[in-house]
Image (tube, rainbow, N blue to C red):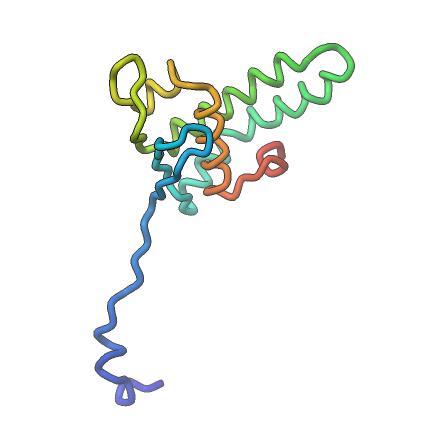
Length: 137
């Protein structure tokens, strides 16, 4: 299409809006909402770099678990992976108080319900397209 054939409404159209974060409703805690970052190329690259070593170590311990009880080390590493993901991508949380104070990223990780933290980590993995099998590679 040449410039002379462009219509005025094509030139003045409003660009599509993209939100770099998304709110999710908690399934485990009705009424609780949390906001996580969507992954950009750079965010994904940084997160993968940070998680790569932990994920490899976790896979090693899971394989070892069948032989000598390495499941504790594997579970600890999975917790560390989830913690990195939450610190990296959780922006905010609404509808939850912890010990009488509005929940924050830090308080969710430190004192919040474990099932909510796991749900948030799973939501981050979904948003970053880092599914379980990808996180372990």
